[in-house]
Length: 337
Image (cartoon, rainbow, N blue to C red):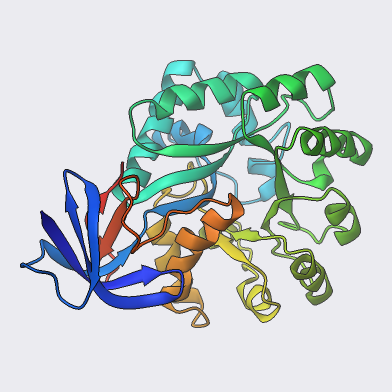
């Protein structure tokens, strides 16, 4: 049996201890020092969850294109540059790009990611093909091909995905959006969307849709976030993406109001889907979050949204782990089942 040792992240914080494993299966946990010299020592955590991605546009990174730095010009449906490129992309290049992003996540300790999947059922199918034999899983949040409600299309999407993940209420006719939300909830699936990313959007309209989580909330006010907190709705922050558009992430207010914060990397054409890079970036722009808090957000915090238990130190043959260098947060050892 091999061992890793150091500070083990539990759902109550870091505790000094060790974990023993054999053939990438966790067999033993304990406090103090391991029975023999560990293969490495550092911060030991469960594998990570990237709580917001769009990996369908990964192929764009290989094109020599100057991306516009306005949200509406680059990613707003239906005419943003991303959507024009997605229409032109072949299945082969799209899947190759997604595989590159999945491998990048895996090499940084991500075992699960929440993906907002464009291109209707075709986008869902291509993502599932990309995930095969990677050991990485995805919460697939599909999206209608057009900005309108079609009962048959939404039925088909929900039968083949974990729910619906939309752009924002500003892009839709609200009555159409209500129909999508109601249909999704009726089927017991997840409903999520971007909110107040480039402008403040009406919090009453946002909450009336009963989202399971929101993404960004850059322009949300104190009162907006207080109501989000009261409804116990998590908010996923993607600071590197916000800064690409010269927008300031709302980290201070989110923490002030005690909102459940998750972390994502957003569009793969803009940023690497390496969640550790997002954590490091947050630490450079804010001194309000400890390393323990940030690592908890991408492990236990993200799994609570799915009611998933992937905890350490309880030995479980399905549980993976990541060992990080304490100073640089560089991965030293990764086990992903």
